[in-house]
Image (cartoon, rainbow, N blue to C red; front, side, top):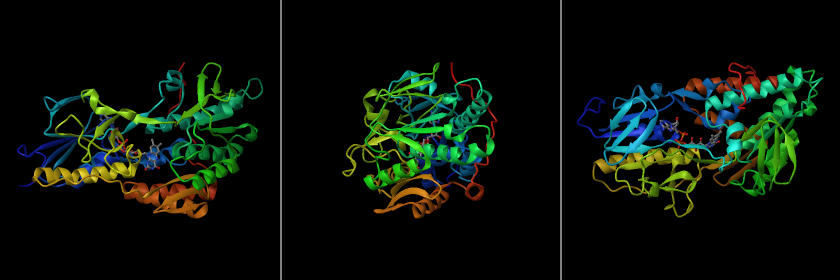
Length: 429
Ligand SMILES: Cc1cc2nc3c(=O)[nH]c(=O)nc-3n(C[C@H](O)[C@H](O)[C@H](O)COP(=O)(O)OP(=O)(O)OC[C@H]3O[C@@H](n4cnc5c(N)ncnc54)[C@H](O)[C@@H]3O)c2cc1C
């Protein structure tokens, strides 16, 4: 049978989310005998690993975002709807969106994760986060606006709060963001804001665990902390954030220290982005859906979850679930594609096992840590490896070229080219 989206006699799969996991799933099912509708509230795929570079002015948003219609357009059996899924009715096999209701035979939830503030409403309201492109653009504006404020109030006011930047969470995102801020301090601030004493800008990285990059080996953690400190970042481990008063700009740490800052960047945790309608008992630790070895949600018949939103405990090497990273999402998407075809042909399904390809983080120019296939690298070679792997992982040839050219420009000029405030950021009151 010719696989076309309009062939209504084909089974209908709805995929919620065109991220790392959802895209790999539909690529596997491209041209196969199944109709697929992909819903995403954005019309682009967001390559989140490079979002901190948008926030720090090194890349424009179009370098890391890729139009979903450009990917889905050529797929004869797949259609895209830009819509937010609001509710799922597993009894009626129906999803409710902001553009209407749609029925499915199979449903796959690939909605990813959202920032976890662990119940701290003050920090949720007032801190900056890095989960979407608008978040990254807000942070870019805020950094530049703080410099402008420091300049205009340098004679009369207390500029400490404008020039103190606090990153909370020493995972890869926190480490990379703190490193990028330190490079702004070292190269952009002295060039663009020569009236400001650059030594007054301080970058703090606060981590509650005993070391940064705790998902990597101790040697990588140590090296990453050393790189950060060489760049001038003040790293505090075994330290948690207690509270934040946005009016006075006072951030209180568990050590009792109070940092004055307008900019708290929260990268201390994520939790699953669930949708109403899936039984409560199917939601587990980290607000993720509990799935079996085939990514089927427990207590549901024909509903699957893949990527960050899914928690699988059947993989013997990962009894507490897999890390919330792009490779897991992609691998689960690809395997579920194969398994759905097996299901349609009454063939046995294959359980998921994570093939860990490694992890990496970059701190700045010539400073990165990389662990691939058990090999650990730090410094210049790791930095080159990090760049190469990220270029390869980007979606779209144009995006790869744009990123490469921007990186070359930034490297030779020591600058972050996109230092523009196109959408001023207003702090919440
Ligand atoms: C700043 C940052 C840096 C990262 N760096 C790395 C890294 O270096 N390496 C790595 O491996 N991983 C990294 N990650 C993690 C990685 O991005 C995630 O693991 C990966 O994106 C998970 O893929 P996913 O498909 O589950 O979710 P996502 O890629 O987040 O996709 C979810 C999609 O669902 C859509 N969506 C959500 N809810 C709805 C709804 N109700 N209706 C319609 N659409 C919806 C969203 O718009 C989004 O497009 C990083 C994450 C962040 C935030």
